Image (tube, rainbow, N blue to C red; front, side, top):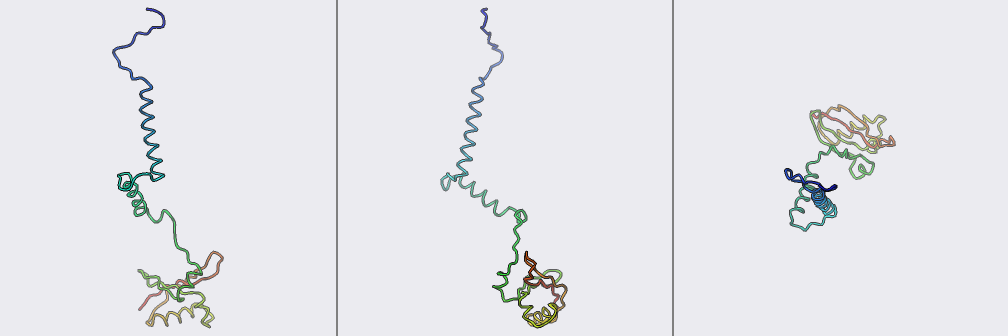
Length: 154
């Protein structure tokens, strides 16, 4: 045999490396094209890709737990301005919870906020009750905006 000539091994078929690379590049190009089309929302309305994107968006909206976003409403002074100074926040096992505006409490001539809150609640509820707790609600500057009052109705 002449130097430099190789004898092919006929027992094992060999795929050329370029064929494997070509398949990989074709698959990779399809993936890139799909991602770009999804990001730029290129699919026609009514196509299965469009429907799949809409289903994914709706699943994200309705199945994502609220706690992941840590999005709790904060009480601001402007929120209380639009209320009438006394808001029922609901009830639970402990009792009824009310939010009383600090300006309404200050408008009563009582020296203690507890006495003013008791007078406001008796006027609003018009039934016997027991105050379980009074917690001030303050903004980030430590200004009292209102009071959260836990009441047990009798």
